[in-house]
Image (tube, rainbow, N blue to C red):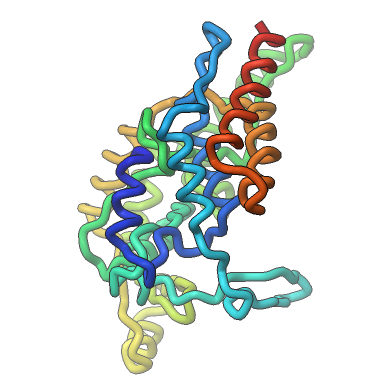
Length: 293
């Protein structure tokens, strides 16, 4: 989804809606830049173009985003872990077409089913973050493993990496509690196993009813009025096809990103226009690119 398409959808939504449910100005811009900043930079020729209309329109759009009401930001303290969360009924707003986008973090079969629940089980599209090139989808790795150049046990290290990537480990569940396996074969096995379980949603969280607890838990949830969900063959096919469409994108430049996030503060505060802000960004990023050449 490109900038132009995003602006059209925002216009269609109207003043009563919110295109992105849980994001403020700076967060939306950060997400766009992480997936789309390279649309404005060409490192091969050390050139950038932040003076074009698309970038200026992006700045104007982001500035128009209203802040999330303070009443929707609540504190929490669960087992000694404290923080804040956004108290918004995502499924209702999406079902009522008061918002079009929900940041879908697919970490498990259950998290995928929660996304389906948010969209009332209807057809939906995983679009990725806004970007004019590529599909904007991001895959984030939690664990990184490598072999150092000066290692004295490279063969042994390589055997460990192969073992770590084997289906035996990738499908064990121990490595996928907070994420998904990186092999398609292991991914399929994980979701095939999940087909035997039921899932139900309560208080904006999703819970699993494992096979060993049947039929008591299933009956209990039906009595409480909770709808039960299951992974289907169609779900697995949809997700595998989606994974195969993800494009490898050049990592975004952190320095250019930092320059933009610094310069937009004056624009958000109303001190300068979008055009002047884009000009400052253009000059600073162009200078940085020449220095790196």
